[in-house]
Each structure stands twice: as structure tokens, then as C-alpha cells.
Length: 310
Ligand SMILES: [Zn+2]
Image (tube, rainbow, N blue to C red; front, side, top):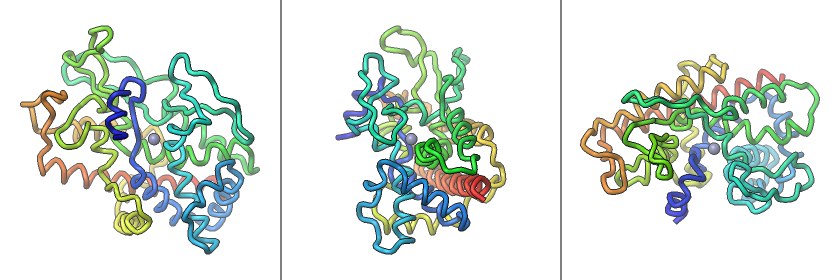
């Protein structure tokens, strides 16, 4: 149902994120890799967040387990506010700002922070540069904020965002959008972006973006997520030392173009009437790449936090 509504609202909500499972697995694996000092600092920041209490639902009783649980929930918070009436969508024209609640700098949903969409075109269609505000600009800002040795309000607000966005940019579909001559803006009739794969319809999976969001599984239980984290532990080593977010998004854009959009299916247009049919080979490759990227994202996230909070 949610997905159906989403399709209807495609033009206004162009990109989602790894689903619950993806974000929670990235955050959980990263948390397990934090050193003691970084754990103390993220723990203090998370406890001072105005929505901290909501992250304790179903948390284990022991203190360590609670801290890890809250950290994992915080990483999904930027997606939960998309449906939270205290917040408003600042990227849509005519939205009235909601009143600022204690502890928040603003009540914006910042839906344009979740992706960068470095465009490409297989048929030479001209495309614009990435938007001025995007996941990369925000990650860089947040890493700067985290560099302060003194705990401050900005760090509290940005930490869940940082956990979330490092996950997002390791999903290739958050790094690119494809422009094609025959893919047109319904309003203007001019060539248009596919909105990070949201406008590419694939058989049995809603659309290409959603397919990748769900590539790590969709069973949102602690057992499943902890099992996935165990499985991811040995993965994502190649490139883990590269802590430059610009590289992360460049890698994602290249992988999207060479793997995610490489369907091996030229027969179907990727429209509702003629969806792309993904092969079993594609599915295997996609799953393997999603796992590699999620694990790499977790390693890099832990590394940047360990570096700043030493
Ligand atoms: Zn997201």
C-alpha cells in the first residue's frame, strides 16, 4: 500500500533509502566496530536527542544492548520523519512550516539530503549537474560538525542523519539518475531524469530504486538484522580505508551505471505497460553488490566516527 501511494506521489518523493533492514544493518555493523571512546560519545549524543525515548521501544534491558539498539534506530530516523506530522516537506512548494519543537533546529524533512544523483545518459541526452544541496554536501557538513571535541546541539541533531546518509550513499541508486531521450517530463514533454530509478518499472518489484532498497532483505526483526550483520562482517574490505565521501558517491554512480542499469534486457522499456524483466543472474549480482556496499558503508562509517571521537 505504501508503495502504491509512493508511486502516485513519485514526482514529489523522488527517492527513498535502503529500507529498515539496510539502514539498521549498516548502523549495527558500524556500532560493533566503534572503539570505547566513540561509543561513549555517540551514546551521549543519542541520549540527548529529542526523539531518544522513541528509539528505546523494544530495546533490550541491559545498558549496552539499549545503547546499541538506540543507535540502530537513530540511523533510520531520517526516513521515519517523512511520515511524522511534526515535520514538513521543505522541498515542496506551498508547504507551511510546522512549529519548531524543543531540541530541533528546524522541522524540515530535508528529503533532498538522501541522495546525490550524479546523472548519466546512455544516448547523449543533456543533463544538469547534481543539485546544490545533496547527500555529499550534507555528509561533508556533518563530518565537519562532528570534529568539534565539545558535545554540542548540532552534533546531536546531525548524528542520526550522518548514520543514515553514509548508508544511503552506499546504495548505488542514491548516487545516480539516468537521462534518456524517450523518458520525458509529463508536464513539459522534455527529456527527464528517472529520479534515481524510481521511474524505471521492473516486473515484480515496483521500480528499480525500490528493488535496490530491498536488496538486503525486508524482514525487519532484530534476529534477521543481527544475522545479516554477522554475514556482512567479512565483507566490504576493499576500499574501506578510503574515507573521502566524494569517492564514495563516485563509486556508487559508476556501479549504478555498470551494474544496476545493466539489465541485459533491451526488449522492455521499463514502463508500467512494459516493465523490465530482471534475470536471475542480475538478481544474484545485485544482491552480492548490495551486501558488499552495505558492509563497506558500515566500515567507513565506523572509521570516520572513530577518527573524530578519539
Ligand atoms: Zn535515506
